Length: 382
Image (cartoon, rainbow, N blue to C red; front, side, top):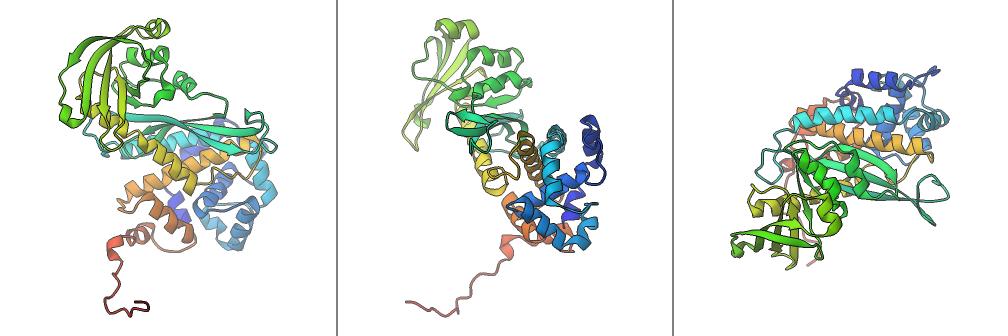
């Protein structure tokens, strides 16, 4: 099963990444591919430590060659590889997998009837121990990493990931993004920097974000709204604050709506004047997908507890975890599986060494095939 799953890896792309960063300079036996496969195995089977990986793989030493691992697995060798080999090898390879996945999920619906690409931008914090990870300074008594992610809502594929220490503010990541003309970028109030957002506006991109209550604006025009839908107003405004007006001199669209579920009044800002106001609010509602993505990877991938303490080891583990996530998404689409990513991962974690066709095993996970409990079952308690 593991070999069939890894068969979907673009190994030519991986070898180019290794050559680009000289990943196997003076390496005699344990190659970068061996390291990647061992770490991917740890992600897919929920291993807890390097010794855990070593014991499990050595117990199946007769099958390692068929898994694609050409060298003996030793804890010290794997630890040294994680600490020394450039993490950018696995970062670039993950980007290659992301490119494949995005093409497969190009027509995937995400809840809003829109042809343009829609991204959700956010960041999550991974808490660390300062005495163990002194390079990831967050506060005086605490260390942390921040995972800045740009999520393509078609298929929930992360298209951009930046790993920084906890001190880096989310808004600084806008400087590293290359705006895509015609695309929508959904973000919360933490990214409300009008000078940076104006760069997206000039590039022909659209953004949707939350507005602050004390934001100084001047209304230019009010569009008619249907108040029965919860909309309060749909206005064209210009910024009147000294610094905000200098950063963004073009007109903005301000939409106010009363959320029927929470009864809260929400204010949205966007530079798109074409889409209906309710569509803009639905787009921002889809931003919650990036929060669910962070919750999902923290629960089902090994990115909260690390096998090494160096910066290179931590970043390598995170990028290999992202590669494993995207690889499972690719396999799900190529095999046209109805099972969720969670179900696929749970099945793979128990069947890595089984000899059965991958599509046959995963196709048997249809929940409709589960037989209901018979009505003739005896009742023990009444």
